[in-house]
Length: 118
Image 1: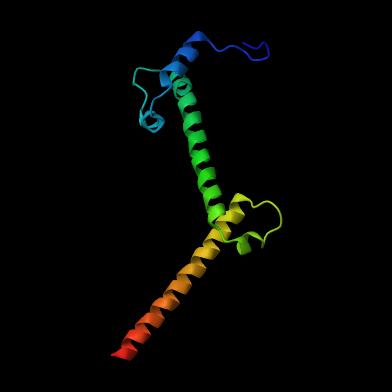
Image 2: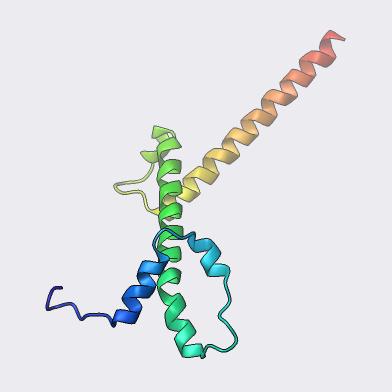
């Protein structure tokens, strides 16, 4: 290993290998055994918790990136430069509300035309 990085105790490395390939959400739901001291259980679950949180953040960032791609260009141009996550969410809400209002107007027109023909 690199000298700048401190070595983890062998026990922690073995625990890390045990977690590879497992379904982390299922691990996250597990409760420590009653006989295990709190400090030991905290260290045992620290690594899966970090991985679960990273996976969750990655999913959120991917969804926001997809929302950004779905936004019409004219909305993207209303901001200068980089679109922050909060701005992407705000613009998405604005666009969805506009689409909902447009759909409602079209629905009302269809109903009016149907009633007029009768």
